[in-house]
Length: 104
Picture 1 (tube, one colour):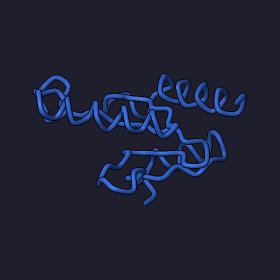
Picture 2 (cartoon, rainbow, N blue to C red):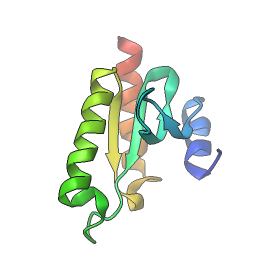
Picture 3 (spheres, rainbow, N blue to C red):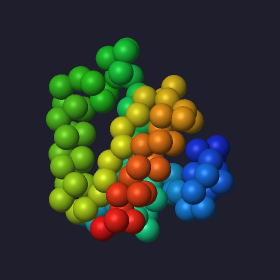
Picture 4 (cartoon, rainbow, N blue to C red):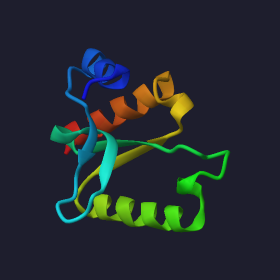
């Protein structure tokens, strides 16, 4: 699925970014966006100021389980709020993650 963010990553870095990528074989966990070839994931954390699912007890704990399993599988995770997804800050985080991965 292509959207503005996946197109931005392609234009800025020449890399394919996949929306809603299922990264774990035995769970339904998906990353909001991922650059699979470098194992970089971008999670858009909604409801930060409105007590959404990700910021309440069970949702927060479930996200920790997902993120910890992703880390154990070698994924580098970038977390942003929706208003920052298309920002220069997020692109800088992605750029730094790409640089780090290319050093490994």
